[in-house]
Amino acid sequence: MPRRDPREARALGLWTAGWLFGLLLAGLLWIGDLSVQWPVLLVPVLWALVALRPRRRPPRAPQPEDDRWDVPYEGGPPPTWELPASRPLPRPPDARDHRPY
Image 1 (spheres, helix red, strand yellow):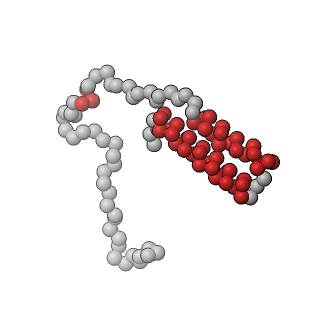
Image 2 (cartoon, rainbow, N blue to C red):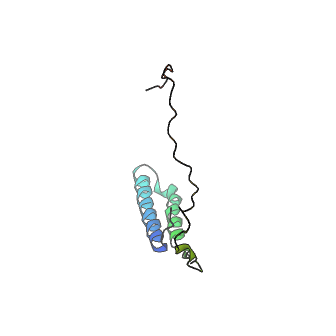
Image 3 (cartoon, rainbow, N blue to C red):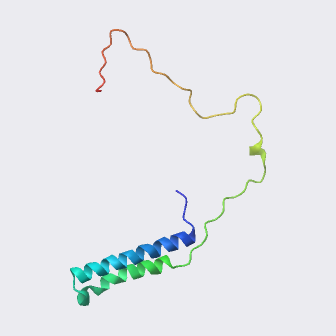
């Protein structure tokens, strides 16, 4: 899976931190005691700080130094590591079929 662009990763992290903050606050107001459990709200704040940290751009893929890979293969079919296609072996006429379906 390709890495995200730094802007996209930052936006996704802030979006997630915002939703987490809102849902935790709603849960605390509905069920909990805000005067005692307020440190729980520091989790999305830390999440947002991590999302805002400076990020390095991913390194670009190195470019090949020569174009010899663009030349078609000469001298027959191209080399391959694939195995030849196989087909099912014929079954004897008196063999029973033990398939579960």
